[in-house]
Image (cartoon, rainbow, N blue to C red; front, side, top):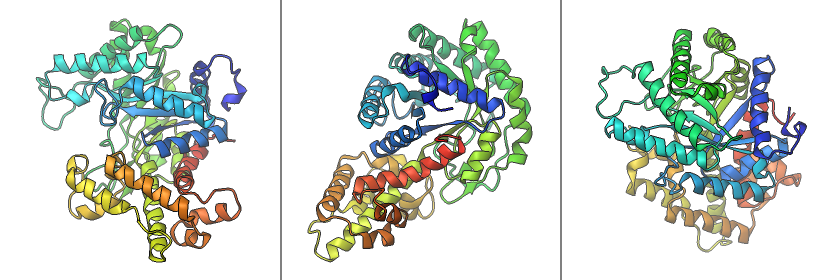
Length: 443
């Protein structure tokens, strides 16, 4: 079912209703799901909006608690800033805000986990309040991390009851902050993979045990009810579990449907609930489709999209270099050198993730930590110069087959403009199409 089959009279509520309908279809055995784009890069967002618009579908864009918070996060944007920025892009793209649903990922005290628990939770409350007040409608509550003063045995997680009590506390804040008729949808549970990819090689990732998933659901429901959020529990649509997928610098753990068979079946015992799968990046389209069929009906994607963008930018830089060698471009952008220099000067975003052949991983790792540097002022300026140089010189079709073979046929057939930004969006769209197809979208 596309959003066009629902009466377009209630703006964003139509999109929220579409999500609920899609997830119910999934529970009913239909190969339908939704994918959530976790990125703040404008080219990625432009590509995602174009894909959703072409498919006649709702688009879910999520920001994490690290990207966007009440102090600006690493993007420099507060929740209201991000909502306004993305909403403006949606309007300009033709998708429109009515087909856009904003989600908050890992909302909780993670950014303040070194502070005393009481202080960290007050900060987390304000984080959730601002997200909901800014119009975010899909809220993932994550209080799984130990805080200052918590006593936890080494290597052991926080007790379910403490995690659930803190999540319920944040849910109550969200419920109070949301206007009537625009209450959020909620996702509960904890991402087992390390956000952004594993730091050590893994050959196999076990799926979450059914008993552990059941304990999370029952404990969280109990604490929602204790906190006066029984009504909110009816809007819990997703549980984050580990389906057995992961990626790292140079490996991907493929989804094994049989290994997750019992987990897949177990969710049907809980009305209205599906699983949300994180770290699905770099899975094959067949694996993504199998995840959706297994009721992992909410797929999160982030690093793969900026990885594709990085592939496109390096390819475009190769085209620029070839044109500079022939004298068609006089002042090359120096994009690759600028990105390398930025990562070396500020190792904050990669140092704890990369070991060994760091120089190689900085540029080519599946973890794609380079994504944190495209917004650097100097790096962003070189990207714009790259675009300007190629716009001015033109991109010969003879170079597309060498550097961007996936774009050669669409350009030759006049389905794609041989313009640098359009070519970058196209590379990202090739990933988005796989998610859309796996979710039964655009059909």
